Image 1: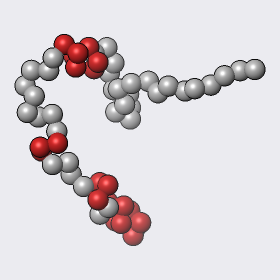
Image 2: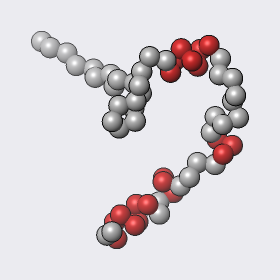
Image 3: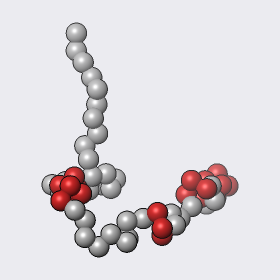
Image 4: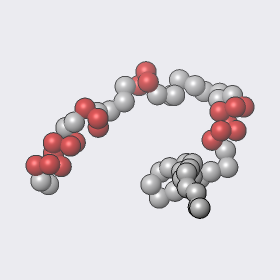
Length: 58
């Protein structure tokens, strides 16, 4: 590993998320939450939603 890689991994951006900030405490998600996450399987990058590209033609 190079120095840049070690610096990146030691950055606070990559720090573990504390348990109190996760949804681990929610045993029964409501209908709205289930509807929001339903129907999409994660792609190779782990994304669940298709990105919106704002484009136009003239």
